[in-house]
Length: 145
Image 1: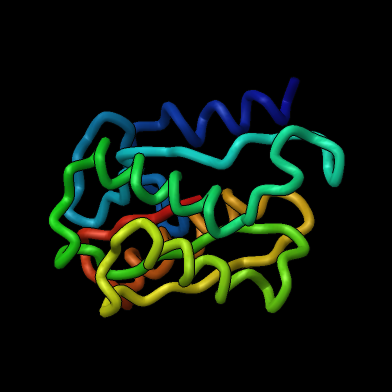
Image 2: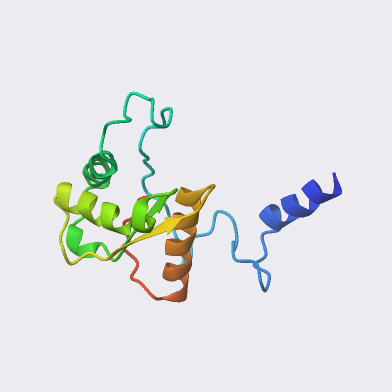
């Protein structure tokens, strides 16, 4: 219970403490990072599921297309694309890039992939958020996790 109280105090304190990356809840800040859409490919049984014969770049291209349709963002504002995957050949960057092209995304948009055995999508989001906070990429980022 002590741990829960401690975590709760971090969320409800209302004061931005040194080292607290969350800031003050309910207060907008210029450096806030906001997720505006979250999509993923469907999950099925490996090698036997309904999508076992579907190329991963085709599945991912549908995620890209759907995200662009939902968010309605001008592609010139997209500063980076980060894809989370598990056990993809070449860490998945080539597949992610092919999926971007299949989705009709601009060739100027950079892309990278994170290969993590668990929570790869969350890791991709964390990497992009950290880059935004550090000022390494612009404020208008499209992240596919």
